[in-house]
Length: 437
Image 1 (cartoon, rainbow, N blue to C red):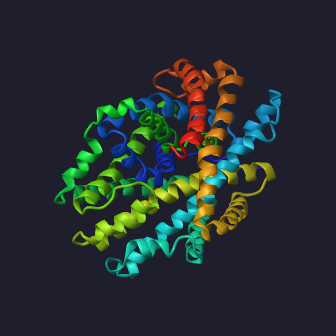
Image 2: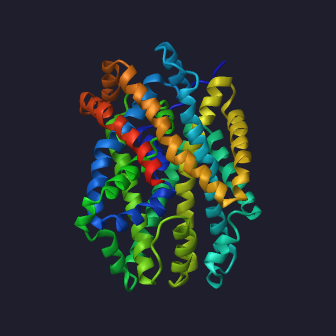
Image 3: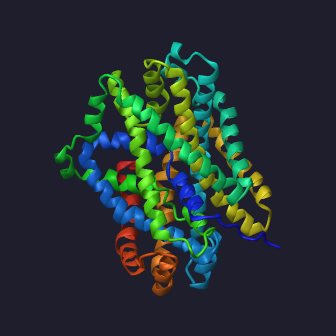
């Protein structure tokens, strides 16, 4: 007998869980760099356009599809069979594999974050060379234990269930993360020389809007920042009732996700300029630049520990959303308990990722394949099926259920003729430019 399907206990818990899924490491080390590199304040114009007409539509689509079928990705496979879609047994699996792959490498980085937080509690981090410290740790056996710990934490949360695990965690850590970011931002903005960082982030460079790459990066940021995948938010959508206003909930998710990215940028970039550090993107920003910044601030060890605690919150909230996809599919397919599915699937994914601990080259290639190719491909398959194979009236009715304003007929048009082609563009442009998220 299958377990009764769980539900989020209320709308707030659902929104905070969606925000937790969306707010991840990309918000911290990519958004502020893109903002500064591709036009400063001018970059916000294409970014907000794509958030409003692309990411917003995509999230509504994914969540509505989940609520409609009240199942995860395996439910999509069943629908495809009913519609006689070729390879119905296999196409939806791409979405499950892609999100599982993201989890595999994501918890390795999550482990690095836990390691740094622990180091700030136990080691004099002000006396070390941060580049050497980072380079001698990653890509070696030293990261394996932290990787496993990050995986075990994720498994533990998921095994508790939707309400006691996912929802409860996000209700606690998301508000705390925002409070920490706001406090650290105030400290950063009051540092001597921080105004140069503010100028870097916000001074509009209007000529950047004539550069196609600015628009490409804004499109990629809008797609990846909210966690679109065709499966992760679809599963969360399957856990909500018909009273939830999905368009309104998605609006708040997009706003809070953007606020988190901006807050992280205003914590790191002004401080980087204040002390003459490179504000470039990537792991180096988080694991080399940030420790160097805090080492030059009074009380920096405590502030750095608090900062890495907030990053742990961002990492775990995203990791549990990623793990929930294969766990839910395993529960549905094999009719096992959540605890058993969490332990089996989580352990397998941890073990599969261990070879990545020993080679940053392999880590990079694996991460690029999953994020650049499989994630947008999985989203394209699932949501193109949603818009072009499901009865339009059913889609409109689902979107409008519980909604204070009826937007379904507009959203379906944007979904068909903007979101689906846009997702195909994310896939193609990712192959051309490399990672755009």
